[in-house]
Image 1 (tube, rainbow, N blue to C red):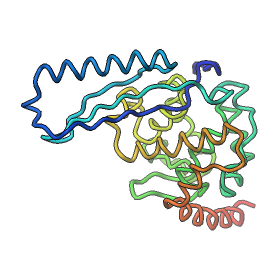
Image 2 (image 1 turned 60 degrees about the vertical axis):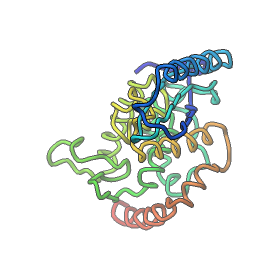
Image 3 (image 1 turned 90 degrees about the horizontal axis):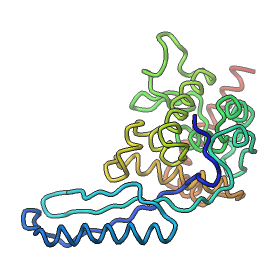
Length: 260
């Protein structure tokens, strides 16, 4: 895996969205098309001058009457550490994560060292996926702490075993970090929507992946900024995450009885 220096590590993507007035696409003239092109070019120049970098531009027909233009640009780094590498793997786990995530702190530290991944990124994925519930299964079939799909496991492998589940989940997260050159947000988008979404761009992501990116980047950024409480995490809890955490707390009691 490429180890991304702190000076290069982008942790946030900015989405610019412009919705045009209602027009029939067949009536869009070449003059309008040129104006669109020039507008995108001007935005690109302005972004570079302001320290950003254009990484995706799209003109997407939503229906017969509407066209949406979206540009995703990198902001300047807001963290002092990379997502990957030996140094990143040894940072302490942030206190912003819920009690159900802190429950797994020793294992998260172990996994971080083994995979050379920031433990706060690992914790962010667990927070969103299961809130630390080792026994949870989704309607789509995703299993356990990291919500790993069955096809990632070998035949007969215990998918709910915490170490097996972590090995499969972290292997996939690690692959996303490789594809995205260590970009935390894009790697999390890839974890949710498949690695192919990393290069395809925000405009074609499923709504679920867009939400995952929103929650993940916000929580991870709050963790790396050294906050004691995460506004984005509190928003996630209020949006339905609290129920997941309540179930996780009960599962962890069962886990302690079963394995201790």
